[in-house]
Length: 194
Image (cartoon, rainbow, N blue to C red):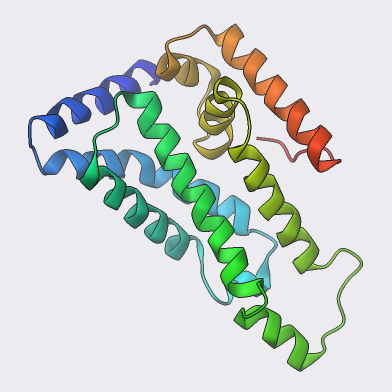
């Protein structure tokens, strides 16, 4: 599977540079299922957010963002493609929190109007934590961010992530561990598993 993903993405990139309009569809299709699993995982436990958007909405919007980016420029390699896809889902999740729970968000107004009591760790607190998580993931050093994105956002196996980045599994594991430690230090909490 690992070599196949890299080979498929590389072939689609070659087709894209040759002007094949179907190549972008192939790239989006490769990212869609991975991003959908991530969106479902991220939205689990946020009932108030799910009233506004579900995983399909989040992934659709992230894929539209990715499509606009791909229409402007082709990624240089599969690693850059996956970096772009991870960035777009990360930005979409952050925008979701801001749009619904920012100062003018419908979720913020709804919570104020209904004066619903908040549990000990409110959904708003959890959303703020996840927003900060995605912000901090964006700030990781490049090698750590790439390894983290492939594992966290794309759910790749060690061998698959290593193939995409053309490095050893040991290198991916080292960067992954370093990224997790860095995020845990900044966020002050253990990260959920991935």
